[in-house]
Length: 85
Image (tube, rainbow, N blue to C red; front, side, top):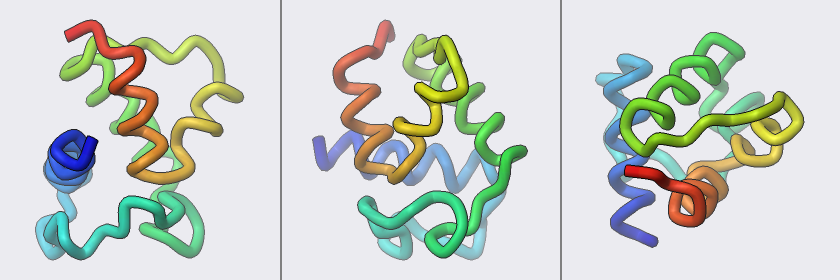
């Protein structure tokens, strides 16, 4: 799981052009939106595209996405259970 969390951190940094951040700067349990990383809805769309391309994951509805996007660890848990690639 820790390898997947690191991989996701690296992928999110690249996808969202967060060059000033390193994976170590991101707390796996911190919120992605609001006080945590401070991401917005555009960033959420970028992450959804990333999950579809890299892991073959399709999110079926917005409420599902809300639960998944609470933290990097939550995304990693979802990916490990649902990945197609």
